[in-house]
Image 1: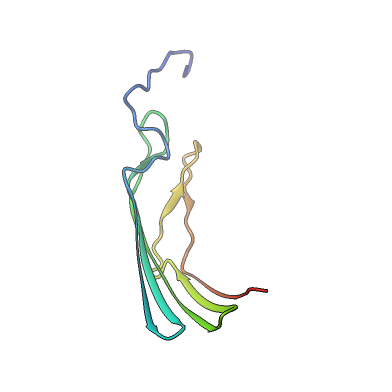
Image 2: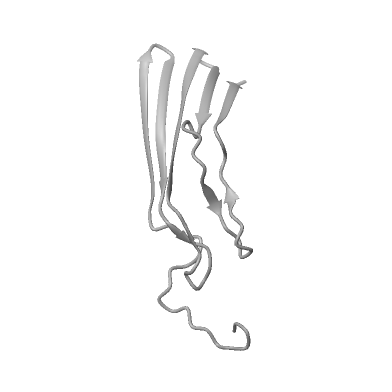
Length: 114
């Protein structure tokens, strides 16, 4: 019920369910113990309410990185998320305000197995 009236949302697209979602990744081992990788995350338009009146636009984000294995137990990686610094919304709660996705972000990691 909305405002004391019965509302029927039959046939509407559920909120926060994108039209389509695609992830495409490529990895290239260009030298012994070295890899470079890149990917595109594509998320289609998404409704942010049950009535299908609040439409969040589609977006695409490009990510990538490089990885080095100096020995069998150690991996060093540099990752770059949202390479082109795309401004996009990941969700929109009922308030109508959009929650923005991660801006361009760099990350370095060291993984040691023992």
